[in-house]
Image 1 (tube, protein in one colour):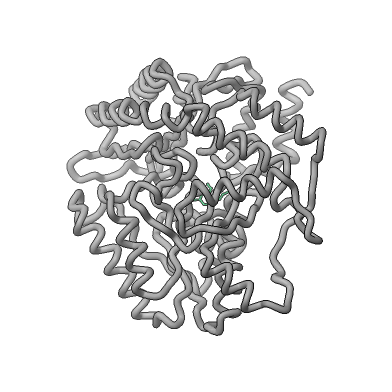
Image 2 (cartoon, rainbow, N blue to C red):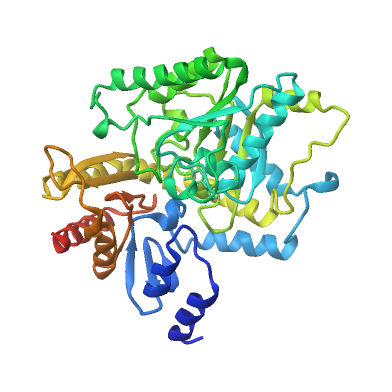
Length: 448
Ligand code: PLP
């Protein structure tokens, strides 16, 4: 189809995720055509440096031939295998074992989904089932964080704490609660890590006391909040929250959909602090976006509780494409690329370059804060660096920055509240980081 016809057809028929529908109709789609390494090519022939790994997912970069090879082989041999009726496939079983080997030791069982939202949704269903099956049916309340993102499923979107996911969707539910996030730049505690950690633990304890521990099921958090603006808590925060949950007798769920698979340095952010969650949700870097797949990893205690609690009945949770063999084969190859392929090591080696590039932009008149861990980072733009006052929304700064970035052939995420999010692929070279920061500086200069 010619490009203009595609744009017209998109406008008429394709509903895009998380977008203002009228604004999209007016602007029109940018059709992407191909990609290689860290670069995307659009239908107008522009080569764009992708500093966001698609949607924080293509951690291994584009054009990895070995992934295409395993996918082709698996599609040829066995394109689909149901997990129902006691069937299974070798890649799915092998990937489950691999994840258990690589993940924190508490996690022993894996349920595969198609992405992150249904991983969170599955975790919510398993938790509800677990407490009902083990004789504590009152444990229904779920606690998460303000600015958190836990996907877009009909219940999970209530754990998400971004206004657009609630407005006109009748969320959050009365059993869903949100505590302040550990947002150093805008917290009264600033960079006092211990005070920030104590405030979060105190808020969790107070909320559980208010609801009654016998009524609280779980606390969900991202080790670093992604879609809420890359909020990087101080080191020790995750561990403290995990320990608080243990004391309060509620389950601790780490949502590592963004932070998993090398994004913050180690394979999982939990590993950096020796945190062992009761459940963990993953997606994105699991297959690096080459095919859809997510997973819930579960502790043995939760698994055994469900299995024994419903010993004579079916646990009614399932998806046709759970443990899809092609996605699983891709996941196995992606794990090989992280480890034997050297991508995890390259991500760790490039981390300081990424951090230095972001921090250098603190000198720019628009930039109030720079925050990062591993290859996950953000700049927060402010109108006044002393008062930290943001920009008048009428200025539509984020939209102007997104347009300027495209002119400068750079892709990152300009959030509505003037936070710019970055998640370069783990395959980035030093030259590509130089290009990223040259184009980013030009982008910021252009909107001054
Ligand atoms: N959880 C977190 C932390 C996420 O960042 C996302 C997506 O960005 C999700 C869940 C939902 O994943 P998906 O978009 O694959 O449904």
